[in-house]
Length: 161
Image (cartoon, rainbow, N blue to C red):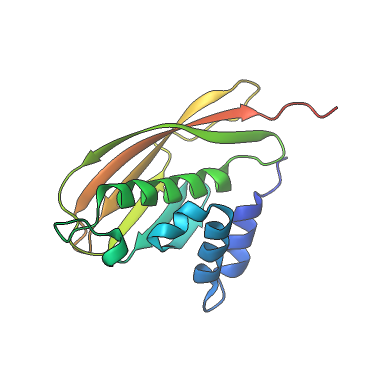
């Protein structure tokens, strides 16, 4: 039986505290510093599910005053990556993003919220496989403004010598 991924254990402990989600997100941004460039906040995390948000502020806007495309790509990678980290068995498997396809559906003129999930539940076996991860980003009206499919490569960890 696989143990609970460390990131999921940390979320389960910290998310119960008053500032726990902020502390958890800060820890994630320390581990992956580029994520901090958009000041995300992870608000939900479970096997196969993650929600993260970004407040609209100057650092994430473009010349039109909307949330810029690369900020939304970064938010999609935050949500999809943390969800994958929380879902892949840490004692037997590893993962890495292999590619991302995105669609910009409409201008994001408000704060945004990313919801990540696996379209098909993963089965972890003895062979490496591509795991599609779906991320949709919504504005504060609940309208989808961005969609991404991140292709994660999941493979067994090499045997220890």
